[in-house]
Every structure is written in structure tokens, then in C-alpha cells.
Length: 315
Length: 315
Image 1 (tube, one colour):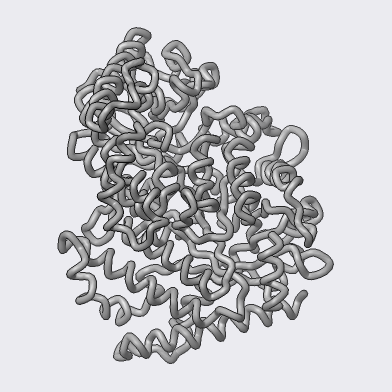
Image 2 (cartoon, each protein chain N blue to C red; image 1 turned 90 degrees about the horizontal axis):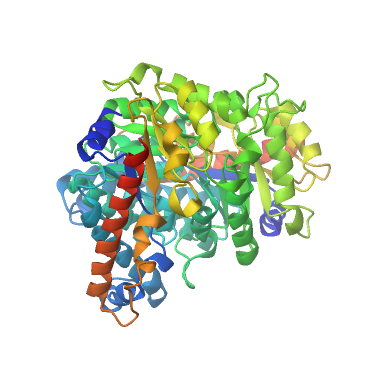
């Protein structure tokens, strides 16, 4: 986790931009501008819409990355948005990760993988690559704990080998997360607290120079009290905090997820940054694709600066 | 789930072949035979090993699919093995699914996705496609329940829309699965039983002609007693049963996961079928790639027939 913490210190900004493009978040003239280009690259006409969206996602992402590089330490591309488009989308996912890495950003792949040991070892090659080739270009992955230790160990081993990290779901930001995570156990704890203790243990022999292990935890901004309690319960576990902004979490809500030195967590916002162009008032349907991307650049940069300032004000 | 159950009845075989290729499971001369072919298709030489494996996986899969089509009703490609190779692997994943579908097989995509509602909706397009184009060609996906109902509903909606299915992890086959799934809850049940009740509820309004809903459950063959109890607890939930063969589960172990009519479950074997060529005694390093694939064909077909006979003997 040292590389991420160093990047946060360098930018003085514990926030990460979620690169989660959708049809609704990319200006339509940007999508339309690729109609000609993709027509020659597909095998059949019915592939055009997905291929066109994929190319538009990449152009959109590059604009956002250019806008926020130097302001934020990291980006978090959510692979679901890309997988929705099929292999063309997955290509763009890896291209996005590579471009972000080239701009000096720490790339947190939000993939929420999880499986039995032998299968987890295959997924963990997202961190280590294949025979000297690294097709994914990511610095960390998110992982689901439902399968227990043997589903996690391969990721921890890969993280050690490649100087990378993982973040395990503990208390997610969504409304239904309580159905499992908040269940009362017979021993008086709750399921998410039991998972928290496992996560702290999974990282125990990977603690870095800054006092945090390579095994982080996902703790939603929408649960401020539980986040604060988890901060005390997991002293060597760095937090990835989703749910800020569009999902309702505020700077005050996440304050307790940081340690006494103002470290220990990084807060994600996706729609609040990459969708800022829709709320700025400057957008017009008649804009050119270039002008729309220019607006995306300015508004996402301003939103990232605002989020940084909001967070640092409470730390 | 009706399409899967019809396919099981047509083949008189409640088993599914896991298409989980690895370097160790594909004959080396098959991988070597693609060295020339891929060299022109990659951007840089360090991509050759992954590209070569990807093409070899496809050739291997086609051989296994040709061998088992007509004997088994379904295949279950595990996406982790393909993602390990990067985008080239994901391409081959979708090509494998398409080829299997063309041979009349039900394709169960073992992807174990799971996320908050808006993200789950993106993942669920694996079932519905993008604007009339279906890049994934799968009939069902596996899903992780850790995020609760709002992470599942988009998959249920997509399954209804596209006449497809999902299988939610309940009690997985791996040794560490008990760390979370077997925890005692304050109300006297265990975590996996609580998840089981949620799964039965998630499927409640999608029950088909055969009495089973579109929302199946993953229940490991390595837990025969719990599987039997779950069969009674989840009367409208079809089971996907991994862990047979290489992981230790036997036909006797899975008997209790079927209903009184011998329906209600499908049992997966991966290594036991696709790796049968390694145990047959007929393999020689000096074999040609074609002869090695011929051996894969014969041994995987024989292993699939043996598994069918072992299962039907106890039902």
C-alpha cells in the first residue's frame, strides 16, 4: 500500500476518481463522432453500437484522466461498465488502465473477483501478468470475501510478488448491503466485523513503511459510524471508501474512516466527477464533440479539485 | 431454468463440463503449434505467450465441446482462466461460448460477479446484450450474494427479459468456505442458510414449468449433508454442484442434492473431464498436436460418459 500512500501524500489528496462510463455519462456527440470509424473494424453491423460506445468510453476516459492527473493520486475503473460491451469493452478497459498508468496514476481495478483457490490464482494474474507480459496494467484489485481464506491467499501472494495491493469488500455502500453484512452472529459480533477481522489477518505479514498492509478494505461512505468503528478495529488496513457524492456520502461522513494523521483511507467518487458536465449548465446539444470533451475536461477537473478541498477541510 | 432442465432430460445427464483450461491442462504440442500463427497478430513480442495460450485454449475447447456435445447438456467456462491472459483471453472466452451454443449446449458462464445495483445492471448485460448485439452468448451467469438484494435484482430482471438464468453462491466447495458461510447467526441459523432463504425468495416470481425458478444456487459437492438439507429448504431452487471429481465429491455425495424425481441439480466436473488425457496412459510427448487433440477428444468423451453413468446409477 506504500505506493498508493506516497501518491496520496504527493497530491495531498486522499481521493480517487471512478472511471465508470455509461451511455448516459458520455456526451452523445462524442459517441456519434465515432460512427464512421468503427464501421470498418467490426465483423457485422450489429456490433456497431457496442464498438462505438467502447471507442467513445476510451476517448472520454482519456479526457477525464488528462483533467485529473496531478490532482488525484488514483483512478478506479469499474470493469462492469466495460464488460457490458463485450470484448471490445474489455480491450478499452485495459487501454484505459494503461493510459492512466502512463499519466502517473495508481490504477485500482474495481473487479470484485472471488473464487476457490485454483481459480483465484488465475484471477490474481491480473496483478502479475503472463510470462513477463502484463496485459491489465493495474496496481490493485477489489476482491469479494464470501469464499474465505483460500480465495484470498492467491491475491495476497500475487500482490507481494508484484508490489501491488488488494481491497476486500467488508461493508459495502449499497442499501441492501445490510442483508448479509449486518447479520448478528451468535458470538455477539456482526458478519462484517468478522470479515473485518479476517481482512486484518490476511494482511498481517505485508505491512509496509506507512503502517498499512497490502490487504485493504472496502468500507462505504454511507456507513459513517461503522466506518469509524472499523478504523479502530483494523489498525493496519487501508480503506477504499465508495459511496461519496452521488450515493449520498459527505466529507463529514468519511472523516472517521481516516486515522489520527489524516491517512488510512481513500475516498472514491465516480458520477460526481465524470458526470459533472451534465450539471454545469454549459452543455448544449449543438456542441461539437471536441467542445463537449472540453467541457468534460473542465468540469471533471473542477469537481476533482472541489472534492479534494472538501475532504482536506475536514481532515 | 426450463431450458436447462429440458436439455438435461434430452441427454438424460445432469452433468456439466467445466471448460477451465490452464497451461497444465492443454497438451504442450498444441500450444507450440500456434507459435507461428500468433507472431503476426500481436503488437509486441512479449504478448506472444499469452496470445499463443489463448488460441490454444480455443482449439482445446473446441475439441472438448465436439467430444461432449450430445452427451452433456451444458458447459461451464470459468472466465478466470481466460482473464488471466488479458483481452486476448476474454476474446477466446466469448468465442468458446459462441461455439458451444452453436453445438446446442447450454452455456453457464462462471463469472461470480457481484456489485451495487447500478453496477450489477451493467454486469447483467452479459445476459441481455447491447442494443440487439449479444457479445457474450451465455445462458446463465454465477453471482456472489455478499452485496444483498440490490446486487441481485438486475440479474433477475435481465434473466426474465432474455429467458436466461443465474446461480447465486450459497455453499461453495472450497475448504475455507466455512469461514463465512458456516458462521452461527444469533437466530440459530447459519450464514449460508440465511443466504439460501434469500435465494429462494429472489427466484419466487420466476418459477417455470418444471417447478424451479430462474435463480439457482451453487452448492458444493463437498458438503453432502448440507446439500441435502438445502434441497429441502429451497424447493424451487435448482442447484449447480461444483466440487465433483478432482475436488473430492462423489456421486453418492451429490445424491441428496437432487429431488425425488432425480431433477433439481446439475453437477460440474472440470479437471476430471478436460484433464482426463493426462491420466489415460496414451499420451506421449512425441505426439503431434493433432494426435494430442485426438486423445483429448477420446478421453474427455469417455470421462463425460463415465460421469453420466456414475450419476445416473445413484439417481
